[in-house]
Image 1: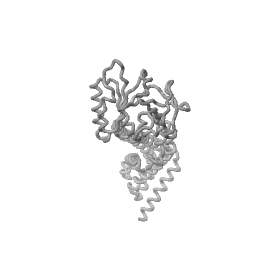
Image 2 (image 1 turned 90 degrees about the horizontal axis):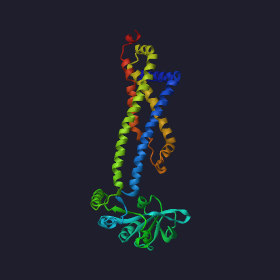
Image 3 (image 1 turned 60 degrees about the vertical axis):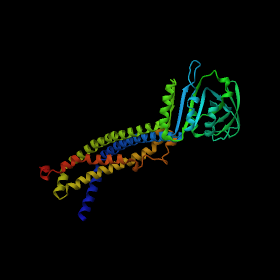
Image 4 (image 1 turned 135 degrees about the horizontal axis):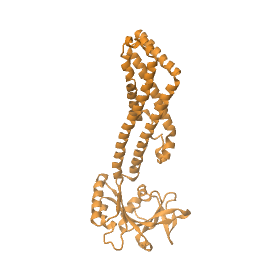
Length: 381
């Protein structure tokens, strides 16, 4: 036991002695390892943040949501309107057909609002979306930043409407993109009939499992009825996109990890071999005094692990320091960049990179392991 302690003390002193003798080599290895780890950490974090952004998008709109947009019916076209064609969807969930006017409404303070026109087919879905049993005013404004139930004077072209302010439901962002929305009944929108409109349907399925089949049936029906230009969007399609991002992340992780491991093997291995050759006679001498090859292998392995763990720790600290700056520049929402809610730089989140570093350390000292198998006579001879 005492001999093992003495061997450990000797090898520790030997490592420190060489570090002080060649600080440039130590610093070079640490800086290179930090750079490689930092690049890998940022690459992995970018994929994770992209996944979080898609998940947040799905969660905010709801997996059971579908929105259909189509160009308005021209006077020469003979086809049913969307609200009549898809009216059977009322039995399967919340069905809200509407028309988007290619005009903006002007609010007080110079703000703009989108204009939506609804009709009798829309009433049931509209009441369900807004959480109203019945609307007290036919014209109303769904907007944040205004007291609820106040009356807002709104101008559309040269026409003025008194709109009651209501709280927008979260799903309305799928239509409005967080802009205020002015709802006008079709009976009061006769003056805008000459302007282009976009027929749309917002549908919330009672069961998200059925939504994919509903989308397929809707597309088949639209093609059959001669709808050439339409767009169907749904968060359920983003689930496939999310799986695709995860698949790409796994491939990028494997390629990036292999690249990091290869460079570490080449750099750490080359420096370790160079140091071994410099001290080859001293090593052979110690072996002749009874120091086992395994002890020397552990010495090189321990040195590599210490340097790589220090580099990994420093890379994690730097990544946390520059996380917000880097990914804000990349265009990610600031709400996703809070490390208190999710920190991709914890040790537990980077087991793959730690495994790569450990394997690279072992591979880097393989040439030394082979060299240490030579007998003392061959080395000194």
